[in-house]
Amino acid sequence: MDVGSVTALLVAVVGVVGTLLSALLTQRAADRSRQREQERAEQVRERRSEAQELRSCYVALNTSARQYLAALTDHLHAQGRDEDLRSVRQRLIDARDQHRDAYAEAQMRVPERVLELAGDLSHDLGALYGMVRRLGDGVPREGDSSDAVQASIDALWGGLREMRRAMRAELGASRADLGR
Image 1 (cartoon, rainbow, N blue to C red):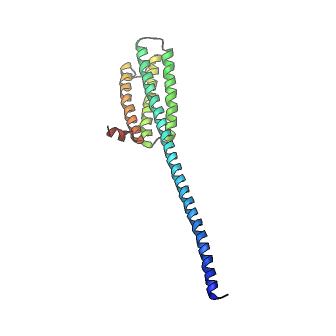
Image 2 (image 1 turned 45 degrees about the horizontal axis):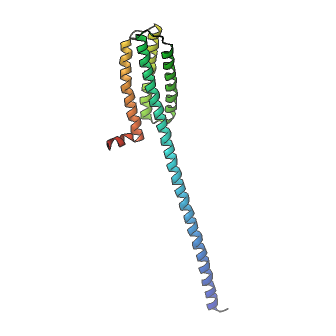
Image 3 (image 1 turned 90 degrees about the horizontal axis):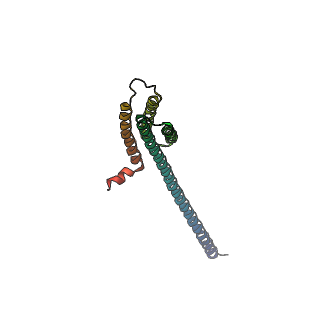
């Protein structure tokens, strides 16, 4: 075999190997690209899922706080009319329990700023519940009165609005309001 034949054979082998390696490298690059795209898509799905879970938590917390406040208001008004308080009291207990459950979930999910507002609201709702129950049971403490309950209810509606604004800001809903 002469040098020209060996060179030609070597060039042919290198050409075939190069062609095969080129196809292999192209395939690997495409596979990596597809995998990165799948990872990005999964991250987007996870972020959307987390955002939806947070939104659901916020909705439950807001709804339960509103129902709790409404039940406290109804109980106060029923006491003033000397009605049978059993059904009103049961509604209040149910609303308190529902709020407690929503708040417990929020403690594990929501950002600190919202949790602080929710905690303050929950604490104040509990204190007001105690006052309403003491008045209803005829064992008021100093400072317990229907007027004090009504003032607390009015203040708590303001606290609920503040918490709702913070939740909306966390969800980006406040930015949507700016466009209107």
